[in-house]
Image (cartoon, rainbow, N blue to C red; front, top):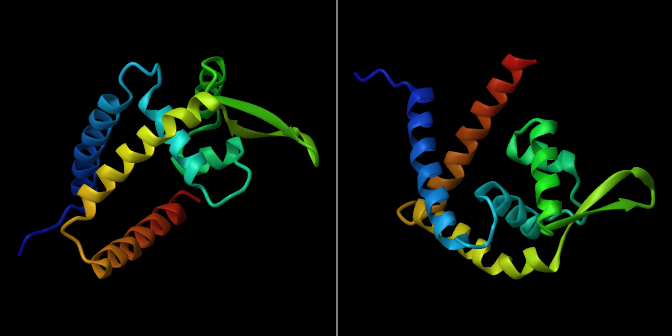
Length: 148
């Protein structure tokens, strides 16, 4: 019987998916002076169910440290892709708002993400996808308990 190495297999598929997604996204946004990570941030903001998106939401979604997200947002702001707007309840909090420039790019970005997602699931049933997420969440929870 084969001894599975789930961590290693997940890492391998992660690299394959990342390379493919990044290459497809780069081809899609080529010439738009936008990084792949910035494209994913725009996609997240556009497709999020939350009304207001804050830096902490991006840190959680992309599992990145505060400094890394802050640097990315600073660059996005310099390139007129986002604005940080204070909220009335707490002047320290700034929601992240897409600019007209990033909204104009959104069709290309969402199309590229959707195309990759379609490729990933095209041979899977809905039940298989649901089971995959059940297992994925159990693994994530196990790792979270180990950290804490």
